Image 1: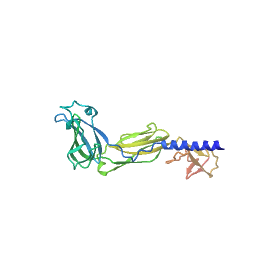
Image 2: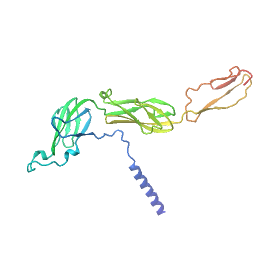
Image 3: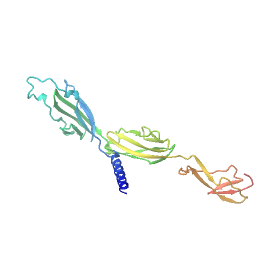
Length: 273
């Protein structure tokens, strides 16, 4: 009994560890700012970057520019040989800046300039802010489809000011099950499920869709009946597979002078087949 309890307890602990290791859905998380490499100023040349309002970037001095440079004079106490924090040189009303991390947040349209003293010179960047960044995307559409069906997914984008200029890209994690084109039109190819992702700026929206088998046949019950003229009998139609949809089903008779269908019933009108 003791061995059995130990085995069960170990099983529970292992299951718990596995569950804890399962990654969480990243939808709704705040992505890290994109990094922008910044060169040391040479002459009138300096790095420039475009941003959108509400967007964040992180300025990073190019690695090769931070290598040890020959020291002038004695090398002690020379300001050019020590690093400083990032500073806003122009446009403090345009951007916010974390001097330690180099993270820039765009507040409104305009031009700003930031700089940082590094070993070997000064790294500077001109920042042009225009438009609005997409902060949130919600993908809307049916979560179940049949093989062969298509649907056009819809988007809800926040803030509303970003809707017109949003550059949305669509991807499917299993295109063999569900493919999606550049307009958000989804096509179901085979049974299974796939997640469709819409991306704009650093925001993402996801929708998981399940694909069920399409209609492959119709089973009539009964498949054969004998009636005398004037008699009638009920008839049913079942989809194949059973969970397929019979929407749009129509009935017809090869000879209505012999038998015809109406409201789930077969009526015998005359002798024949």
